Image (cartoon, rainbow, N blue to C red):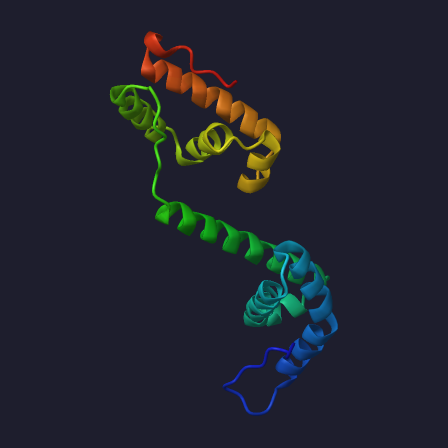
Amino acid sequence: MPVLRDSCSTSPSGFEDTFEDFARSNQQRLYRTAYLLCGDRESARDLTQTALAKIFQHWRRVSAADRPEAYARTVLTRTYLAERRRRLRDLLAHTPIEVPRTTVSPDLTVTLLTALSELPPRARAMVVLRYWEDLSVESVAELLRCSESTVKSQCSRSLARLRERLGPAHVYITAN
């Protein structure tokens, strides 16, 4: 994997030399971490290059830090998580909502979807992932980057809000 170089410059300055030295000595370690995060070589290469590009943009500040390697690892991880969130957002934005055919009345379905839309986005995501997608608390927590107790408490509060919104005729909405 070639080390990132500024294409606008024909001769590297001392600034670029120190970055290239840093990149050469840390690129394999960053790539291994990226591979463990991404699970495939091409994505890991892309992630490593993107992280190195971000580090290069702030190299004067990074090179002055006590542990530039730790900074690089943080940039790599945050870049991965941001890309993952972006892909999830794109996927959710382009995935049509499929309402299953059940014996539930259309009025109740509309009422439930309306009540669900009134929840804050993060709480709505937790409820949908936990109960609609039937993911475990652990999986939802990992996906949304929060603690399991946050998922449990938010889902409990959200179900209470849904029950309140739907009224006494629908108190059978439970977490189970």
